[in-house]
Length: 239
Image (cartoon, rainbow, N blue to C red; front, side):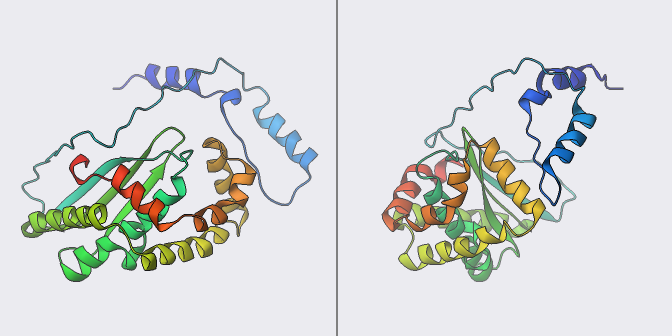
């Protein structure tokens, strides 16, 4: 039986009101809500805040391959992972656009077009960009039948190499910009999506000004910016 000492110690060290954010959205009187918050959390004791340890990352480290042998599995699950830019980086918007073109843009993305539509080795493939305050990651994932594992892996590597060598096109960039111009306002339609957006922005040290300029900054990105980021930050050998 696992002891509760380790989880309790983690809670005591990290879970403090002066190291937390409580965000409330909705139709209410501010004073009434503040009173309810104090009633529920007023006895929560403050404590020392321990500084986070920065996460070092590099775009040139040689990648590693890990294989998990599952004799009874009928499908192979493929997961690529790579360091990415943190959200406070000047090229953050350019990296988002790059990821949309690579595999974040659904059926219009390069990975879907090459691996699913042309290669026919998988039904679903995507890339996901997860930026944090001091580092980011990009993940490519898919599943395929065991017999198609190698060809699928090679197709993914080919898409990555083509992106690095040739860059993306104006048409691809404009499609990515149009997506964000429509999608970002939809993230502010309901109280819960507004809260989630503001909370994530606060955790990553974004200001309300940063949020209000999100679409503008994406639209200011040039094709040369995205292709420079691809060559600098995307290395097929480092996945």
